[in-house]
Length: 190
Image (cartoon, rainbow, N blue to C red; front, side, top):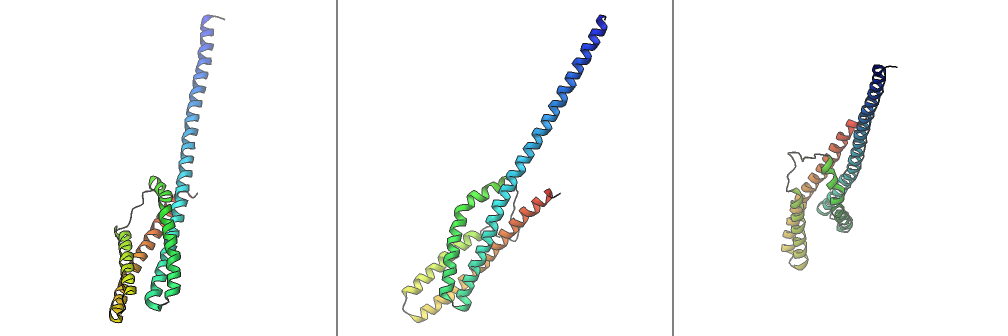
């Protein structure tokens, strides 16, 4: 064997090793990117599940609030309405406490925008209307005058009507966001 043959064999072996290492490098890179995508999707799916659960609970709770407030102004069934209001209030408190945990992740993975029909101040309007309603109820309970009591009752009905509209908007936006998440995830159906 002469020197050229030995050099040729060494170059061939070296070339095979380089090509094998390059192939391994690209295979590992593809596997790494696939694993990143898999983990990203798993986190996105987890966030979607938590947020959707929260949005559906908020929508259902909004319906309970709407029904109880409607009972107050239409049926006059104060006992049943207040029972539902108390239950809805407890759920609202729970939803408020868990909203940060369940909704913060969703903003990382989804670009949820509120539609033009949804007024940004709706949630604060609900808080203000509930505060106003509680004031009217407190004043009505303190008054012995039947005429003032009837006036306050009518004012309370107007506040409740506004509240029902705001709550319906909250229900609608919760469902809108849940559907947006669902539609986004449909891309991954194969």
